[in-house]
Image (tube, rainbow, N blue to C red; front, side, top):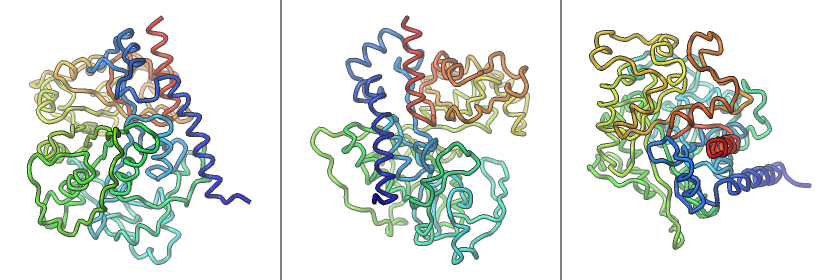
Length: 427
């Protein structure tokens, strides 16, 4: 009889192979980030409105969380097999200084930590500032309070809130370290035969740096790890002496002719984003700006262009507009300051304004079609001159704006819509 794990592997390979075949039929064996003659012809014919002139780059949001527990080894494999251009990890820091991959600062929502009695004493409450906003979380297990050995006892689970997502892969996979993620992507580059971009987000840097030996401990730890795995060049020296305990595995040499994909950093903390940009000049920075009113003005884009290569807002800023979205999340602003920066840019002009400053645009998150799209206009039709009614309308609208990157779930579905739009435009 086949074991559960073997059945899982067969399922992943079959599902992923079907997705990969679809993608390869549509786009050639390599991603549009690395142009082939076939995609070059498509690009020339269609003239996409992106900064590069190529179709938008698809980022696997937390891997392929539409089908697999997010940030698991399986989620990253599935994203690769479905043809993602980049595969995203979120970074956190354990009590004993290990970088691990998890979206939240806590673990109760997506692991079995509540089922492990020996860890029950670590359940607590925390409040911290994140980009000027107070965050309070109660009755949770926080990564910064736990050692790597404790976290390695856990198994990842699919969020049960989304009943349509497969739950039968729960409790199969452990939480990965950042090093394990980078090893995995290097191995995928070899095994799948094409490069994949890495795009780590540093979560709540001030939260994780609190209590460390110096205020850039988290950032430098990430820089040194990414550099060791040959994705980053350290252009301004970091505090290596504070990381003498960082023991990274020897590299597996890449076979001849194999090259790594690109890298990019992400952060909502713009102090961290600027620091990363200054210290790794070959790794562009994605500025996540959902809660920053000034970022949606001409003057704000001027400021961002001094250190960021990519600006990443929540997708509804392109539909409902900055004022409506900011009000919905209880963010206030100084009207005189916004006016002095040129006023809020209309949603349909934001991509073009960014492009005029050589900034790429990367809205998030484009969900699997089973999940509500979460636009304000779907509850109040007055909040947006255009309101997507289905997945195709949503994607076609953003393609027409010229967005450069898209954080997506269900990557095959996203690729198929990209091809359908290409055929429509080229007709």
